[in-house]
Image (cartoon, rainbow, N blue to C red; front, side):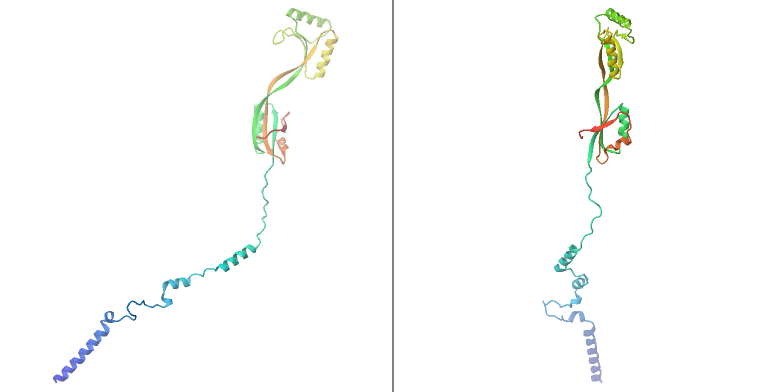
Length: 239
């Protein structure tokens, strides 16, 4: 009886030890499948870096890149339809003279859209005020009046004795715009025995000019906007 109980206990003890060895100590007693110091082998499909490289697109080879470049170079480019811009040609002109500074400013405003540049300037000019027929000044007022009486006796009218100004005691015989009429009056008085003379009367007046730079395509286009009498144009130095 004792032997039979001992035999059962030994069998139970063996079963318990086997179960403990199989289930409870795997992480401690399981030996490595490789020798110490030898790295563990992995399959290529298990390496994450090779998996990512396999999924990336393959780079182009040098030969394929050169082939693409030569193919692109061989394709003819479409011709450009827009012509190359050409430099515009300009002309420099002087417009005038204008009668007043206000007229010049008005013209400059009207031509602003047609001119590349513009500038205004003022000059002094000599303008004729007509032709004067006269008898030279006498030495005194009395002599001038006596000569005027002789003119009346010769039936020469339309005269007066200058009593002030720069030529006192001169006898004026008329101021004429047409030099032909002035010569006719002078010759009439000379024929009557008097030393009549004629001279042009001039005075200094301001002139207003507008210098413009306009396109050489139609340099006379300014006349469509400026119609003032006496205003002309001529070429001038560019500025």
